[in-house]
Structures are given as C-alpha cells and as structure tokens.
Length: 164
Image (cartoon, rainbow, N blue to C red):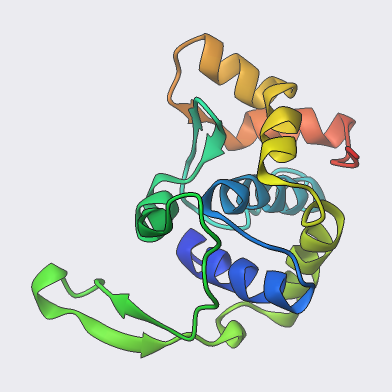
C-alpha cells in the first residue's frame, strides 16, 4: 500500500498538470476525498493509504503530510521531483527522486478522478464542504482525534463524494 506522503507528492504534481493551485490545506482535503473514493470502491476494505486522518479545526488532516509540507504555509506547494527520505532515521537522510510509478496506474486513475472533480475548488471551499460532512463533524465535535476509515466509508457509500 502506498504511503500518504507518496500519494500527496503525486497529488501535488498532478495538480500542476491540471493547472490547479495546491496549498497544504487543499492537499489535506484532497487526500481525504481520495481515501473516501478508495474505501467506497473497495467496500471499505482497501484504503488509499494506511495513515489515519485527524479532525483538525480546518477539516481532515493527515499529520505526517501536514508536517512534510508545513514550511510552505498557505502558499502553493511546488512540484515534487525529489524528497528527503527519513525511513532510515533522521540522522541518515537520503535524497530520493520521486516517481509516480510508486503508485499503480489503476490507483493513479482514481486519484486523478478526485483531482479532476475537487481540484477546481479553493482550499476554503473544500474546508466548507468537509465541515458539513458527518465524518469530520462527528469526530471533531466529540473531541475525537481520528476520523475512522469506517466512518469515511459509511458516509461516502451513501453520498458518493459528488459535492459541487
């Protein structure tokens, strides 16, 4: 299974192809919708990425991805051609080239569908959309950190992500 960071890197790069600006805030919402699509397509069995999504003030967030891109603040994230790999520990950083082939073609197609549908929206519009959806609302207002994959699946199997 692909990590949320690799999916995020792919989303950043493909957003440029579609000429959509992408900030960290917008990226977080697109990851959430990708997770929803993958869960619905697999009937709740196969998420897009294994990391948990948390309910933060401005909507759903994958903390590891937020931290990786927080240096850009509210500005657009530049295309990702390489990145610092910390999988061998922080003291053994390696620069690696990013390849979209780390994600299967089938999965890239699903992610592209999300970008085509939701990429046209501003970050603030995506925040507004997610703030009106039960997975975020239930977790946030119950002071639960995690928006469970089950909650995402249960909500979106009924409401197929076609908010516009």
